[in-house]
Image (cartoon, rainbow, N blue to C red; front, side, top):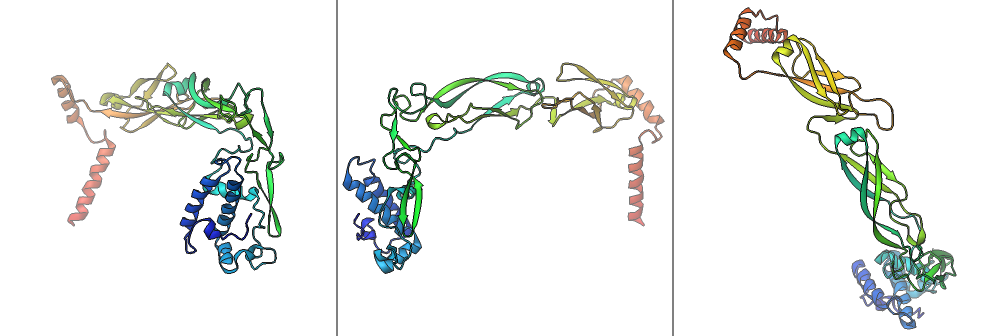
Length: 376
C-alpha cells in the first residue's frame, strides 16, 4: 500500500477532528470500500486497507500524537513511536478494528467458528392444584433448528465448503506490528477455516432454520414460583452443525382463591362463630389432595391464632414428605340476632365477672393505672 498517504486525507477529515468525527468518517468510507461491497475490485481492497490503517492510528490517542509529531516515521522500526503497524496492512488485525466499529458479521463475509447454540427461556403458568399434583403439558415454541437439506453445513446439498485462502484453513492470520507478531481471527472465514461458496437456499448458508416444535414437559409435584425445568438440547441449534443449546421452562404459580403458599406450607383463614371460639369445636378444611382435614378448635381461642395441621401442605419438590396446613382463625361477631339470642346474651352479660375475658380485664386495669398516674 502507499504508506506515505496522509492518514487525515485518507479519512477525509481535518487534523483537528475529534474522535466522533474520525469514527463517523471511517464508518462511511469502510462501508463504501469494503471488499464484500466491491467483489473482485483490487482498488477498493487497497483503499479499504489504507483507511483501516489510518483509523487504527488516529483512533488511538498515543499513536495519533506520535503520528502528528513524526508522521509515518513514528511507526517504522527504530522510529520515535517504537511500535507501529509494520506497513503490511494485513487483513488479520484490520478485521478486529472493523468488528469493533460495525460488530461481527456486519457484511456476512464468513461465519464465526461453530459454537453451541443459544439457550432459550419459556414462561409457563400453572395452578396451585397443578403445582400440588404435578402434570404433563405440551408447549409449542419457535426455535432455530438444524437445516435438514444441508444437514446443518450451510452449503447447498451436493456441494461443500472450501478451505479459506486467506488463512489457509487455520482460522487465524498473523500481522507484523513493529517488533511483535499479532495473531487475529481471520476476517474472511471468521475463524472457521473454510468458506461456503454456494450457500444452501433453504437456510441461506446459516445451517439452521426457524421452525415451530411441540414439546412435552413433565412438571413434578411441589414446584413453586421460579422453579426452572431444563430441556437439554431443545434450545437454538448451533451454527453449522454445532450442538444446540437448552430450553429452560420458568414456572409461575397462579394465585389461589383459598390458599396462600410459603414454601411447602399452605396458609388459609377460616371464620368461626364466637360460640365456637368460646366453647371449642372442630372445623373441616378441604385440602388440595381432595381430602377434608379436621382442625380442632380449642375453647377460648382468639382471632389471629394459627392452628397447624401436619402433613396437609404442599409436597416437597423432588423429595419425600409433605408440608403443613396452617389455619388462621378469625372470630366472627354475629350481626343478625333473634330476640331469644339477644335475651340469652343479656343474661350472660349480667353474670360476667371479668374473669371470662382476661385480656379485656388486664387492659382496663392498665388503663386505669395510667389514668391515675396522669391525675396525680
